[in-house]
Image 1 (cartoon, rainbow, N blue to C red):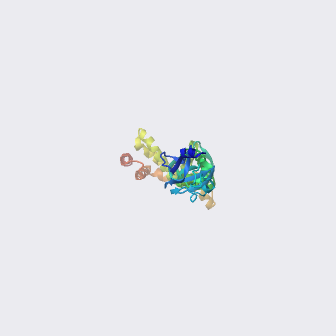
Image 2: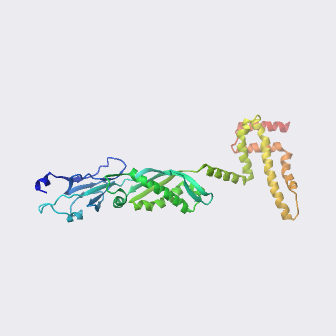
Length: 348
């Protein structure tokens, strides 16, 4: 190349990136028909890192600050040919800028239900979604593993690859945690923590640091939700008093629609109490003969339990109504109306 061609060439003396476009993780400085002037200024801002690539190989990584591109700051230049003994020659290389800002509020979710093995329910199908944040920390690894020589690489490009990693990590985290699904679902912060522990090494492999990972919602298939509801109901039946209260609460809306309204609820309440006492008496009657070594019939054990209800069912109605009022299951107006009806029958 002659001296005239050299003079006509355009040289770059300032390299910098203004990050005009949001969501860009890696950006290559445009070099078309340009060469970098020896001693040019490279400005790397606080939220950036820069990588100098010569002949396809990474020569150096520049931290935030202003750098003069000379043989002192960039040793690879010593291997480049000088234009003339009087001054150093320009050189042809590539400079890539990387954004190190934390990428906040990135959404994740399971596009399809994932199947997990659970100690309580066996196989569980679930969906989940939430948010996470991350930042780029190792531009050399990110350049080598992810972005490569592309002119522009965005977080949307990256998150297409991260989505499958998140779902895979969720499956591994829940399966390896050994925590029952119900306990994990009740503590979504714990679930997020377990998934983050699995994800962090994977993020580091690509030059990224996982800043935060949160599970916002877990949805279960309808059949599993019904099974959980049934288990809760069975747990209430274990305590007969709670079961009676539960049944009574369920019957209030229906009783309000009947002709007798809440005034007719007393009979149902007495029946509920009687049923609970009959069941308790039956269980005691079955145990007592075995301990005493004598045979006893079930009706004989039941009779004493039913007697108090038969003796004064109206007082039992009043007690049950007062209990419903105290628990907030009926209003004061409903209580007063039903109480008046019971007292009317009691006094005659």
